[in-house]
Length: 266
Image (cartoon, rainbow, N blue to C red; front, side, top):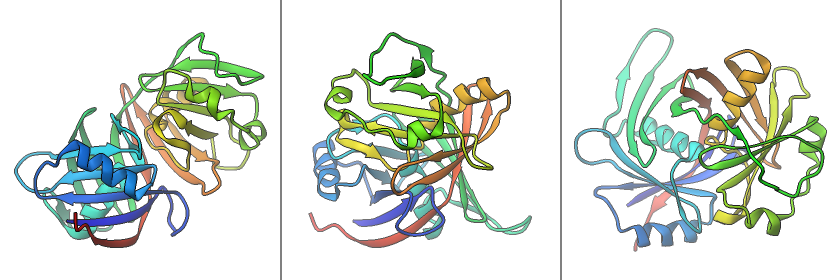
C-alpha cells in the first residue's frame, strides 16, 4: 500500500499541518488503521479506498482515535489523488489551468473537493456555534460556544491568542474533540487568527485545522458581516485557510505540498 506525507494549508514544505495519506484497494480493519495512525504520529492519517464505483470512502484517525471530520487530511488526500490522477479524478484542460475534482464518502456525509492552480477547495458542512456554559479555564473570554465537535473560545485580541499558554490537563477533561481559541486578525488580509488544542484526542496543538474553520467561518461571518474570509492559524508551523460561507455549507481552500512517499509492509 502506498502512503504519502503531505504538508497541508501551506504553499511550502515544513509548514502547515502534516497528514499521512494511505491509499487502499479495499476497506481496512479499523484497529489496523488506528495502529498505522499511531505509528505515523501525525495529527491525522487519512485512509482512502481508491477502487470501486461512486464516491471514494475516506476515514481519518488521530494517533488516539477516529474522528468524524478532518479538513487538512482531506485536503492532503485530494492533493495526492489530483497529483496521481487516481480513481474518480476528472481533469479538464483550459479555462485558466488544470482542474481536478473528487468526491469522498465520510462519516460527515459526502464531501466534494476541487483543485485548481495549486489550491484545493473543499465543500464542508458549516457548524455555527451556540453559546454554552462550558468552562475551559481561560480568562477574559468574549464568547464561549459549542459546535457539533468543538468548543469555540473568543478572546479580545490576536496577541492573546498568539501568546496563549494552554492548560492541557484542564482542556483534556472537557467533553469535546478540540478547543478553538480565536480573536480578530492583526495583519492585513487576515480576518481572524486562531489556535486549536485537542489533548482529548491525542493532539496537544494542531498546526492547522480545516474542520475547525467550519465553526470559525459562520461565527466570524456573522460578526464581521461578510461571507468571504481569510483565517490564520497561529501555531508554530502556521497556515492560511480561505473560506466562503454559503448557507449551511462552507468552502475551505488551501494549498499543499507532498514531502515524502513510500510503501506500507504490514
